[in-house]
Image 1 (cartoon, one colour):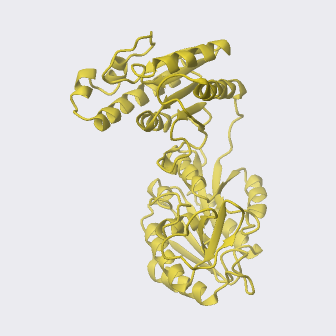
Image 2 (tube, rainbow, N blue to C red):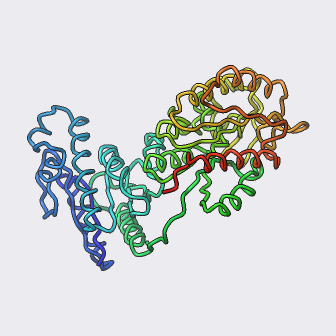
Image 3 (cartoon, rainbow, N blue to C red):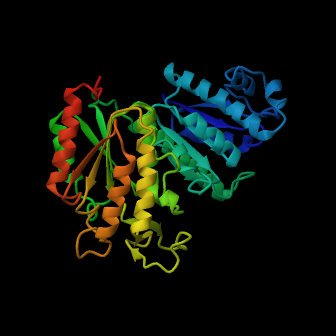
Length: 409
């Protein structure tokens, strides 16, 4: 029988949590209830009380209340809930976890789920699921999110649908989970679709031949965040960060970004990284919304009904080079940058709509001025999608492998 941890404020949401408990029982699993309330007492029986949560934060519930404001109390409770949940997970007392909440409960749940192992079923039932209030970098790469609609207070037909389906999702995840064979070391690769960046077609089989597994992350905001969360968890042995549009998007005000720390995590954790300027030809925007400030009146080309993009000019590519160069110079691990003079993607070829040789040259000059040893600077005449690029990237990778810089154990 699978044990499913339910995390919530039982003093205010006892009806909803009791309904979830019954849903999980009906799916022939055992619900385990953790109360993360601060002020009130639960009207139903719980397995782990607010006092247990406080104890795992090295505090008492009275001390948490004494912090004097709800934000500090939430942060303390989140610390205790995270510690207690990790303990239960390591002791194999739970097989999956589901949390529900508004902004407060969501904030706490994201802290709790942030350090649970990859593959451990985790479901967030939230009134702000999918909202821009949630920073992409706070979402674990394998989290299930369900919008808790119409249920901020009290049970009704609409919210019962959300509650029951979320319970089904986390139970299903625990039943579908299978033990993986001894994993291969993972190399993270960033990319866009193959209409723009094609190097993954060559890189993946070549990494496989070398005994590695390539994981490709789509750089549309969530992808870069997911990759860097896995770096923090120690799951990535090397990074081929060849699509950097999330970084320039952030600094040009586009919402299609992965936050201000993008491209700094691998260097901070000393993970070897080979970097190239893929995607730094455009700024992205929502097709259905206003363009970023400063890009009004610029020609945008819809990629689909979700995302559209406009070409960067020379001064904007220079700014992107400055930002990226400064980030790479902070790196504490092996770092290489490959400059592709023939263009940064398939839109950046002579005759294509985003091609600008002057902008490419300006980018190169700025990068060359910033990057110094120990960052290695490489150049090729070709476009990033040509065989010369993947050959050079693999050559650098192989040299680092021979030198023992890529840790595979």
